Amino acid sequence: MLSLRRGRITAVVERHEGLARLEVDGTPCIAYPRLTGPIALGDDVLVNVQARVLHLGSGGFDVLYANLTRGLELAASEGAHVMKLPYTPLQFATRHGEEDSALSERSNGMPVVACSLHSQVAPVCAALVGLRVAYVQLAGGALPLALSDATRELRRRELVRLTIGAGACFGGDAEAVNIYSALALAHAQEAQVAVCAIGPGIVGTGSRLGHGGMAAAEALAATVGLGGRAVLAVRMSAGDSRGRHRGVSHHAEAVLSGQAGLVDVAWPRGCPFEHALADRATEVDVTDWREACAGLTLEHMGRGPDDDPWFFAAAFAAGRLARQLCEA
Image (cartoon, rainbow, N blue to C red; front, top):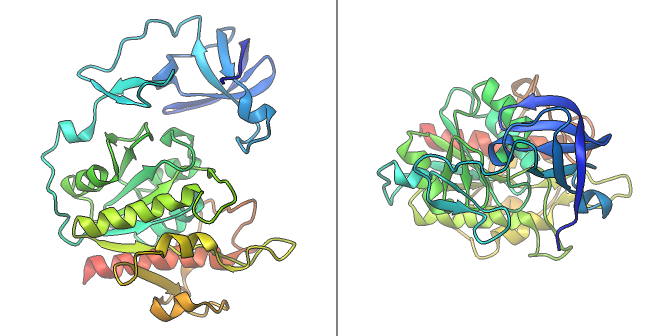
């Protein structure tokens, strides 16, 4: 059941392309004007409060559901007839890239880096500087591309040239019905490398397979099926203050199950974690990863490069391996 509340916009804190950060009756809220129409101070709105009220990791904000003042009877995008979020209260039609591009069913060896967390994307892309990189967002975390400050930063620095919302994700330069057509679209748009990840945050049930990071497995399978080179960004960590999650994450192990021999795995040289995965991985020099990532916002579960260096170094290694495959 939806948990909706009526209120008024009392502050507009930030505006970005596709995203606004607001306050509704003094409570933080985000809005996606491409869906709900323009917003202004004093607008009468409905907001979805459920994630904030239940402390479900939404970042402590509500989400604008409808603008009753200026967001009713909005017209669909011109020429749009394929739905995002179909048959839900949030369904909307948008033009998809498959409708406007001739897509090949083979990607001719295009390297694709699959990430199980959004916080891996920035260091991966830092290793790909100078290449035409397509970022493909997958369901498993936040669905709107506009929510990601990291993606905006990568676009500004031209570390990402094209963004694609696959499946339920939306708000990219192009939309795609699924990961297969998203990768085909990236190839058709002359991307040299594609980077796939879920959006900020992650859906999870605490089980080995029931988490959003498994979207990386779908990206790897699609890459192999299309004739590309699949590279996994291994999630590893120094662990939290209680020593939990130290070493290679069970996410990486679950993603690779059933992918033996089909996926390239990058392992950062000098990594202190012992794991069987290292024996089937390509060792990559990452001594310059900090310099390459200088100026980028790097954060993982509240920890930065000094707190959890191997998390970011491992992601950088995946980007560097993809670069080597691209230039081979």
